[in-house]
Length: 114
Length: 118
Image (cartoon, rainbow over all chains, first blue to last red; front, side, top):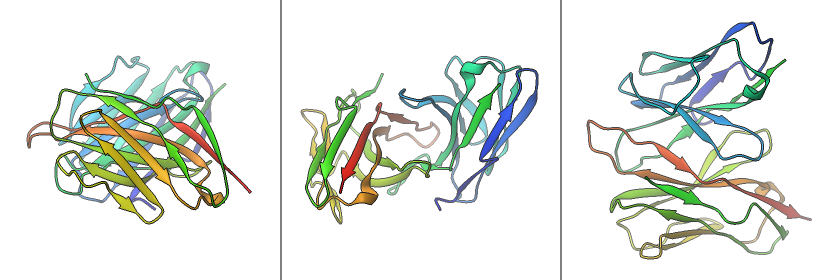
């Protein structure tokens, strides 16, 4: 266990559904991230929250909506997704700086859009 | 912008043998961290080894060691005495050393799929 927990582990949703992915960390980190991992493609950084403020949005479609209510929780709200959005969505957290800086990852949510 | 390149999409190694995974990166930063992450099939991505750019000594963690060549911007991972449990995707990653009020983000390479053959 890395200390970063994602729920649910698996999600199947229709294109008209609305669902949310949840990420939680109690490592005292002040930065949290959403990544998309598709088959045979590099990890794509989607969103970055630093001290609860969104500091990065890598041209992600508006059907993905992040929320960071506090430094320990991160959500990814999904609505009207497309089949090509099917992927593994990874949450990660890190400390902004420090001698042991590294990113800790959750187990991921395997999303299938039907 | 920083980029990370892994030129070997797939590799295989016999159990108990040694294998080296390549990684190159491009950055204008002087202070940064480099990582190798391991993602076993259907398992959580975990950190294998970390290197601070200001340290000249290569990092080692048990059977895992790196060859860090800062001038060449090269960061290879050597796995000695390969075990079946080493079968996984391996991602090389870069993180700049941020200031207190900025943020760091990890930039990943495309990954190398390593298969350890019994």
